[in-house]
Image 1: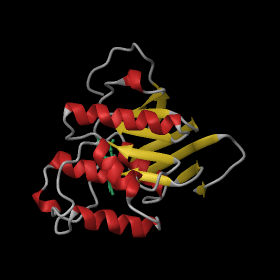
Image 2: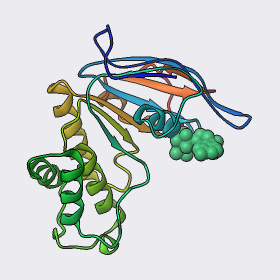
Image 3: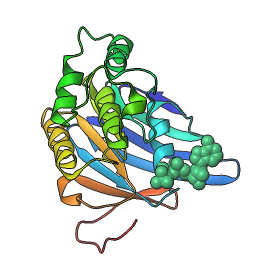
Image 4: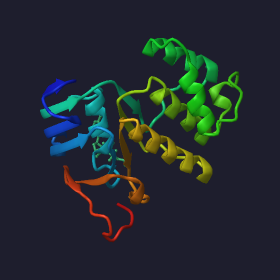
Length: 217
Ligand SMILES: Nc1ncnc2c1ncn2[C@@H]1O[C@H](COP(=O)(O)OP(=O)(O)OP(=O)(O)O)[C@@H](O)[C@H]1O
């Protein structure tokens, strides 16, 4: 597979003919997509459709069997399963990711946590936090380096309603600042918040039109 961080087009993210199989199970069968800078894109698909596989390929955690991926700028990735350590504190996580991203300070992380209504002490160890609270931290550490392209896998799972609304405010603000946001979910609600919605089915992505009858994907 070709993977590049720049290219001749204005697309922030571009995939062409991406294929991936696990053994004899073909999961992605030629995914092609162009995402312009500043776009808020949704990808929906049933459980097991290959959404997480696609994101893992985009961030380089999995290799495609064939196809091309182009991504302009830094990537922020919020995985479906948190990569946080239960024995460490909130502050330790923020400091760890600050060092990993080589940031001068942790300001953006604390700002995001505040926007997401995070109300636990920075000294709290993660094993004491609720699932939704962990997800707030998961999201904040995925975004704190202000990446150009954000890949968010079920980013609002466990959020209460108010936090869920805050999530969409943050996503909208980022797009207004020219960031490109990809939100992956198994449900296609809130499509009006998106610029574009695609459905992953039978290993390919197709545009999902606003107004189509919707239920569980
Ligand atoms: N490392 C792996 N080895 C073998 N099969 C895998 C692996 N990862 C995923 N799969 C299979 O690939 C298919 C797609 O999985 P994936 O996690 O990408 O789907 P998904 O659309 O994100 O699902 P969900 O909505 O349930 O999270 C599933 O059938 C899954 O069992």
